[in-house]
Length: 410
Ligand SMILES: NC(=O)c1ccc[n+]([C@@H]2O[C@H](COP(=O)([O-])OP(=O)(O)OC[C@H]3O[C@@H](n4cnc5c(N)ncnc54)[C@H](OP(=O)(O)O)[C@@H]3O)[C@@H](O)[C@H]2O)c1
Image 1 (cartoon, rainbow, N blue to C red):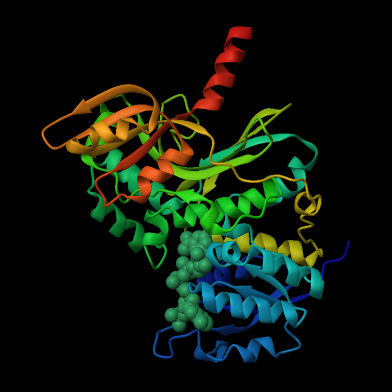
Image 2: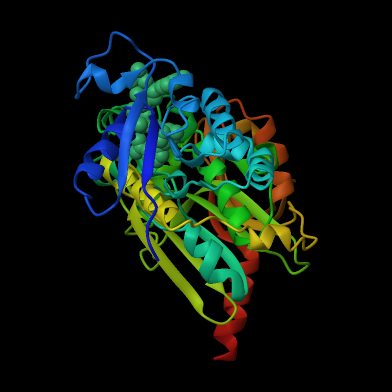
């Protein structure tokens, strides 16, 4: 199969844009040339000559010789304008912007269909790790039961530094920002929003379910306190920000992002620093484990490059699982075993939200409860959170029950 010549209009020349420029120089086999780069700040010093840049998006969008738009900017609203305009003009698009894709998933599906052009976004989920194309292509014939993983590099970096080097949260966040791992707006990472956007995209490609961001519950790492850290250290656990989606017995799907205690025998335990890891579980193949760099200039650029290369062979997502239109919906009925840290005086009232209380501990001003609670009740308690409550997942009860049943049968 012969490869198409690609003439690229690039939006953004920051951490990933510059990375893409560099990796393209080292990939001469790919017939892809960046012919124009659109950026925002007219005063900024650039690593390459200013004749390469424009500040007017129409210089790219109206250029008929450009057949691929690569969107690598840090503004989701402006990105949607650029991407939708490019698709309407029949240009193939590559994007790394999970927020923009998650917020406009349905519109982007429609645009791809109506204008018969591809939009690829492997770098938007777990940067260098090739998860979307695997979910899209490989798992179509298999019965996927669950997907669980660390999908945000900067929070994983922060948590790793907190546990291994005893850095404070602020010091670790600053390091992540200096290394180019963190989003320009850190709350996107630390609040679990970035992980939620990625989970939304993963849900579409794994279970064919298109959610809205507001439908997926997320808790980040910005509220993790000393009590939970001490609990983890004493029990030789780590805390990881874990996104997960799994099918319930009714066939509906639970999906959420919640920090989780992981044990040394969990494959996510050794996924440290800026690495991401995803475990998929299927009915017949048991589990698969993907791991790779989840942020950074060149690793992210390598996923963008892979999409550009795929376009040269006319690859596109077919969204088979979405168009199959199975009637699934999201449910908040999952039973979760969690640790809830709370103000001492709230202990009594909060226990009533639990279906089962395993342990309850109080010190002079705060305390924690461990036990089983429905996701619905957890969301209800979290809604009134003013920073004095923190939830760490211990396990998903359904999975624990299934595993116990397997163990008994063996
Ligand atoms: N960094 C990572 O490790 C990573 C990993 C996976 C995905 N991503 C995604 O990749 C995208 C880019 O991230 P980044 O880290 O490269 O961001 P960045 O370093 O902050 O760079 C952003 C770039 O976008 C340009 N820009 C902003 N608004 C623009 C507009 N309206 N028109 C044209 N250019 C505009 C900026 O222009 P100026 O140079 O003029 O300021 C800058 O060059 C984001 O969607 C991010 O979520 C990043």
